[in-house]
Amino acid sequence: MDLTYSPEEDAFRAEVRAWMEANVPPSPLPSFDASREGFEAHRDWERKLAEGRWGMVTWPEEYGGRGLDLIRWLIFEEEYWRAGAPLRVNQNGIFLLGPTLMEFGTNEQKARFLSKMASGDEIWAQAWSEPQAGSDLAAVRATARRDGDEYVLSGHKIWSSRAVFADWAFGLFRTDPDSERHKGLSLIFFPLNAPGVRLQPIAQIDGETGFAEIFLEEARVPAFNRLGEEGQGWKICMATAGFERGLMLRSPARFQVAAQRLVELYLAHQDECGPETRASVMRSFMDAEAYTLSIYQTASRLMAGGTIGAEASTNKIFWSEMDIALHRTALSILGARAELLKTAPAAGNESRWLDGYFFSLAGPIYAGSNEIQKNIIAERMLGLPRG
Image 1 (cartoon, rainbow, N blue to C red):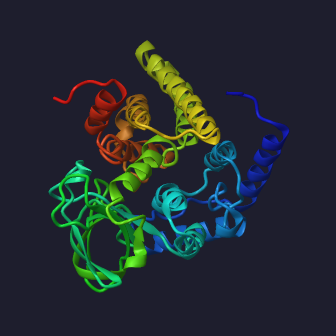
Image 2: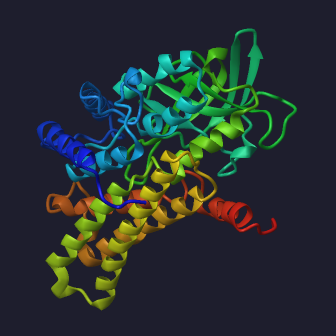
């Protein structure tokens, strides 16, 4: 892996930086989980990105992208986070479903869904988890019964991110009623405003509605909305999980920026901090850099024709635990001020650390709990027997 950037890559970085400096909103947008207003403000930002063809730079031009490689995507992400640009409200679509659709979808499906995904015209939610299944994705019970050219969806999904205000969801359904575990499953898209689809918002720890329960009561969707062959859902879902755990969902730039902010926070309070805090700050900074190098290595391997395998689970454990440790260190530096909510008059920008800490606590759970990831590592990477 060559750790130097080419002149073309440096020129691309300069182009991204200039566009961000000219277009990133001067003030933070309202939260996309707190209200429809905030959600639509972020949708408008997605549309502005699409106008500059920045929606997803690795996608082909006919789908709203630039046809660039993964190294340039990582450069784009570095400049995006450096500029303090808004969080991507359509991350479930562009980072997870989009790459999966590119790999398994028909030309007709790509033409129908990808451009609207890149433009922000259609925002996507995940519909993986179920109350009875927890982190065991193979235990899903929601069904999709074939009826002519349609599927009839029935079941109960939970912890569906962005579902409260989103337009579409993608989920795993049992299309073979006699199947068990990972067999007989299919990945199916469904509009969240379809008859028979009912949503129940779930409040997060901060009171915002980042998740929802989805109740499917014989909702009908065209068979066109199935991704891949019937019964191929587990294979497709594992590809999506690889993108989620190993590369796209948590780009290293996110943690590099947070680690730099942590260093600046420490320098502003170093007279109040002991050697243990200093060591924790150094560890967070080094971990962010190590994660960056790992992701660049993964991107280089994929560009050379490789694939994301079980090692995506090690990445997922690393970034989720790193995120918690980084924010705990920041809270320890702030002391009692760390408990100020963002609504407190004296909170200032320091409240971002508490918000970030709350969110980091979910990291070991979403994208497959870390306990499940450790089982995957033990069985598929280390060859250990099942317990």
